[in-house]
Image (cartoon, rainbow over all chains, first blue to last red; front, side, top):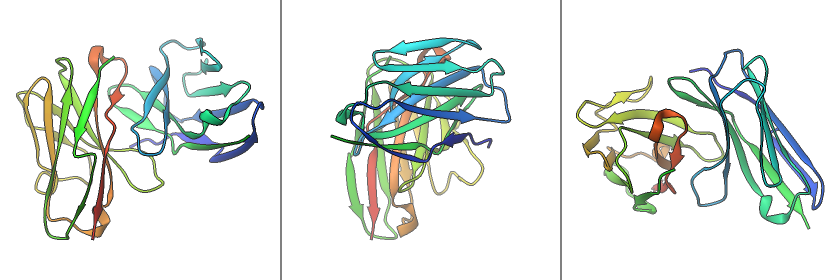
Length: 108
Length: 113
């Protein structure tokens, strides 16, 4: 099925820095979702976006649903060590497609 | 949202055997999904399991290898049959209450020797 192009593949940042990652697709999606997966756990939903142009925040996390409905980004401000994990974007119509993930490492 | 549990959380199996994974949800949901996550990879949908009907399998996945049961609105099982080392993965169930987002269980980590 249609896969999403997620970038960057990995990030190594210093604590306190801001982080930005994005997903693009050649297909339109009705919903964009961002998940975080920590070692030994299943993906946990961070933010869900339902309308083109929508900008939603969850604490230090901000995500936007692109106007074209073919892309989304996730920003993390003032990163902390517990932000470490793999972040997945997902686009949803009748089914759900996932990006390959962004592996985030935060150095204290 | 939904609270999902999976059993077992991990297992080590011999090739040629089978493993049945259970998924329990704290509320009634129509749609349940089974995913596979190979080491270092993203999630791949195996099948959609709706109560009262046969599971719908994605391309590359067949019922003989991945039989699924969905006896009621809060429970499902996935069996991975005739195990080989290539089946070593994380298996995740998810649910879609309300049809707008999916929530995942903690996963079952399978290692096949």
